[in-house]
Length: 491
Ligand code: NAD
Image (tube, rainbow, N blue to C red; front, side, top):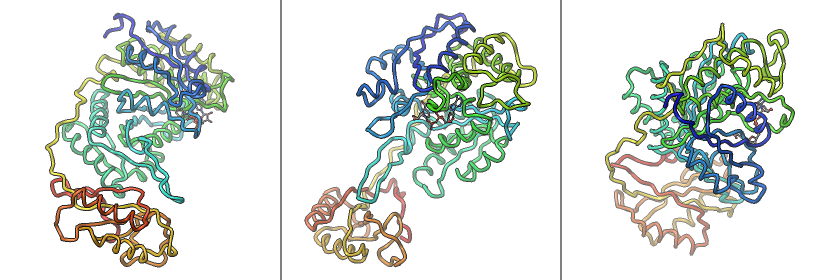
């Protein structure tokens, strides 16, 4: 699509808190730049939640999104507790927005930052991980959140990161995971990274553990280029990186899927400063610039971004980045937008000016279908039964005795008991604190014997008869002989 093509349709939501102010400012800049978009407005967020719709979005809003496939969204407030689902998470997952792209750039010496050379793009996996929101309270004492990492989800996001890096002429991608601890979930993400990397020999790769990776990112962000990481780490790391650039108010983000795309600021609805005309609209404006590139309005995107850079360079700053002696003029949200509008057509003199070309767009220009995988042979080799148990002074030996006698009639035998992941039977240590949540691992009585679902069901029946409260099971599988579960500590 070229800049002369018909008006691209965009669905717009004004959001909550500072949302309406920064969206108003952003839309004024787009209009002045003659972006010529067909805007459909929808209601989402707090009002919709409080009207009794716990998803925060009305059913007809999805129709508007289906029509436009492009969403410019101001931040919204998710009411805490009360069963309200985060609309941000719902939108990303419903629309299949698998990659969240967050460029974080320093604008030194015009915006105060300790890292003048920083130009990092965080690509965050956007649909999975602990963000699946599958949480349970299982016992009086213990809660859990399921961390789901899939091969297709990881592959789409990681391939997008490589495609993005290539199109944006970036040299290196760093993968951040915690696979030294979460060997199966984060291990899969890292393995997929290594596989996809082989398709892109022109791009340098690096793999770091998230903790030291974040420390280095905070200390020397200029050594990073593109970073790809699972959802939760990406959330944290991108806020850290955005703040390093001078303010969370400076960064925009693109949520990319095969069919849909959503553009926003990375920050939230900032209720503490709402309604005061002091919020920085830059994050949403830069999100809108990514949207313009996505819909093929490259020339407009270039003009708006360069005018924005010139505004920053001229020292016209909102309160979050204003520094006495460094900034020239402290302005509010709307005056900042006016300053950008007044500079449309100008280019920065010292900051790097931008020039968006068709190919640099955020549109998915590659096959996002995960590559086919050979079918593997899956075998059930055991079961973990989780129990809520608070008797006999929480003595693991006593629990083992009860389990062994309850399981006497089934072809499964108790192998190990752990409590919060630590082995407590056989051979536990008296110092280990035990909660009321026990993982009891059963293997077949005859070594190498197959385990059937009927055996597991029979075991659970016997446990119920013995008055043992099983709260969940996890089946232990091998895939082509490779163990698909973490061994218990000391096993
Ligand atoms: P926040 O990002 O809204 O605010 C954090 C801090 O940064 C606040 O001090 C705020 O004043 C400041 N800040 C944020 N944006 C700014 C801007 N543009 N200009 C100047 N200062 C700015 O985070 P929070 O306070 O943790 O969350 C508030 C609400 O936003 C919550 O309901 C949360 O669920 C929601 N939230 C929404 C999104 C989204 O819609 N994408 C993202 C994150 C949080």
